[in-house]
Length: 178
Ligand code: 5GP
Ligand code: MG
Ligand code: MG
Image (cartoon, rainbow, N blue to C red; front, side, top):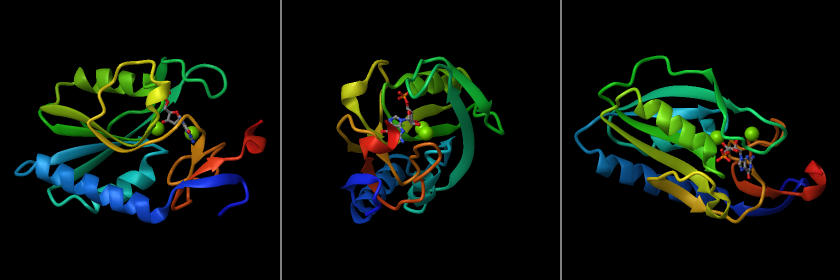
């Protein structure tokens, strides 16, 4: 385990097993259709890359990058699009792929933005969910793991752009960010 971590919350084996289940569930739910997965950069990149390899129906990719206005790490709900989708999504079956849903403010904004573009359907898939922290009401259709209110890194999630490459999810030591 990396010395900046308090503990490993979800092991590499647990992550992979759960993502396989999510991929199989999605393949089943959308059988006979094709889907467009929209990865939210950068955090969801690792999750998306593994998830799509467990999906057996046709999958197209697109990506968005957003940034939350406001000071520090607190999510404000005012979201700025840094990179929008490459193509229209009208009439397509879209799944937003996120790393983690915390207050839900970012996701709430994304769902509204994409819904207004008239997709055939729109669902949300997140690797991690911190239900205790929810402020905005958002429906999560596929969720890898519920986790407690702790700051986690790894498997795409960063602190100051670090630790994204860990193959597991760990709790960052408080001393690293205070
Ligand atoms: P929300 O708008 O749901 O509050 O914010 C979601 C975003 O906050 C995530 O996409 C992620 O970038 C960041 N975030 C929330 N909780 C954590 C956490 O425990 N670890 C890391 N690394 N980022 C988090
Ligand atoms: Mg994210
Ligand atoms: Mg981050």
